[in-house]
Image 1 (cartoon, one colour):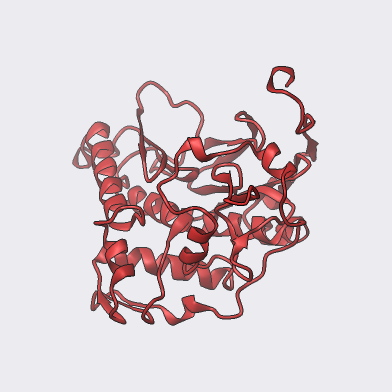
Image 2: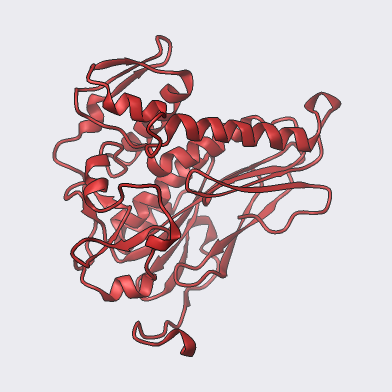
Length: 336
């Protein structure tokens, strides 16, 4: 997230959407904008509504009801239509690598319930356990997402019976983008939805976004943003052992429906919007080291290999490569 704000900035942090949320609001550009505290309240309230609408873990959410509905044409709220349209745009941009129709496969991999930290295993331990050899992810032969359409004017979502939707990481970016629209009257602001960060403000002040390491909870890089977004996609946030004792995580290879091991463990992308940054980061991670440079070259990004190598790409490529020395997976924590 962004570096520590000055004392005149409202800094609000809370847990929602199964992740950490942080909202920073600076001084208003005009009296009509209201106070930063009130603006932070509006953002927090909106994100609560977003979670109530789009969480697949809530039995009463609109998304859950849509997925259970047997009709092929389903009435949907403006927020639902917007979120699904964003997910379909990400699928189109990624040519199907970011696929919002892999909910059944995600549940089969073991991600059925609301995520808790107790389920997580250490990344080094997971990489040392049984898992597929690294290879780039590929799109599914049957692109079910292409059969989904959204009619925002009519308030309808159309999809074949039985096709379920999970907006996943795209939803966090979409929520951050929409929350940012509520802060358009302020000099500086930032919204961080679990690592999908949207930054803006009328002052044009640059902010430093801290990029944490994949193998350690410490800053390894920074990205300077004046207005736009930064998002990170990585294995370490949600990685577990499946029922067979194999390493599994939430980023799936659409071609196989299984957790993807591409040779990268994290990718961070910059972009104009949080949805686009989230999409680019996920595509880079899924495609692996050989293709990540071309994916991230336009706006810039950072990748972390399985061996700990950190690489800055595109507009961020001025810094040299850095190799982080990793202890053996068998090293005890007391010796790390």
